Length: 456
Ligand SMILES: C[S@@+](CC[C@H](N)C(=O)[O-])C[C@H]1O[C@@H](n2cnc3c(N)ncnc32)[C@H](O)[C@@H]1O
Image (cartoon, rainbow, N blue to C red; front, side, top):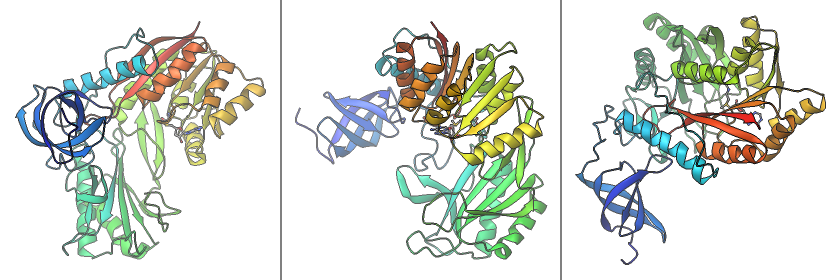
């Protein structure tokens, strides 16, 4: 067949899902990625991009649906960039994620024989998120600003979201109140080009176990008097509102983190209970965004460390210290290593609040701090690592091999870098005992996995 061209209509059957959740099909051997295509779908696809080895297309019509295709319950599905897999039945979402992990182990890590445990599904399929970040954007009509999420693959366009199914009714109530207030008061929206205007983001957080909610309004200027009435309104109308914060980000960078923070009402943090501990979470703190599934993840980590009480443990990439603090109860001493000073401060505060004294948090990059610890003569029987998507830096991995703990429990949010790092660790003298996929974010292509390693 001649190489297809942009605009061509092709008939194809989708046979797989790619890493980000796009369907992958072949028309006469030519590979086409189709957003919204599901394995088993027979589709007519219009090519929007035609490269020499593959193309991208959009669905013109579904000629025969996949047996796993379901009606997506969210009215924004297909346009919103959030939940890309809502139209795939949940058991099939789990099969896709488990297969991605197995494929990465074989293709990237060269480890076909590693046992992959059955994936652990999430206990809640909707309303599971404890944090959402909405962008405030100017609406074309004058009825008030858009408060919503970015459109799929369009970072320049924001979709107005009245109700999001992956957050709770309480958070949806807060979203509605804030939207109505912004419209009534005709508050100006920040304009990225000119740098003028006020409103930038609305971030909502909720302690799922405590019921405490936080509203964090991110603006370009500290206009407290304009927003104080919103804080009063939220406190009186949504009883769960425990904290209303104003974060000021006057910089061009489109991030929901401010350079200064003002308390508008309540406390400067909310609390969340997890694994028997209570964590204080402030507006800019990192905290796992699915509380119930994080509890299962951490229980699995705890069980996998097989702590007896006398060990020294190092928690690499410790964030706000959830794993460090949960494991401190089971061993002699824990070091947490984390690059973000703010997260280290939160971890120290949470250690104090929970009366945990057998831990120390060290701020810095793992590749620098871990060799320093080893140089000071510190040894550890067990290491837990929960790196960001990029996985280990090669120097950090070498330091881990030098430390040579008896057991490593590796928590990963990216199976590709997990497979790469496990391959290195296997070559460095570790046996990969098993890999356990786990679904933290139903309806999205995100994949979490835990691996347990033992020194051979
Ligand atoms: C997936 S999070 C870990 C979260 C943590 N387990 C928790 O529950 O709070 C990864 C963490 O690694 C930190 N990080 C990223 N690069 C790092 C580096 N080179 N050295 C140390 N920490 C790093 C990030 O700031 C982030 O807090």
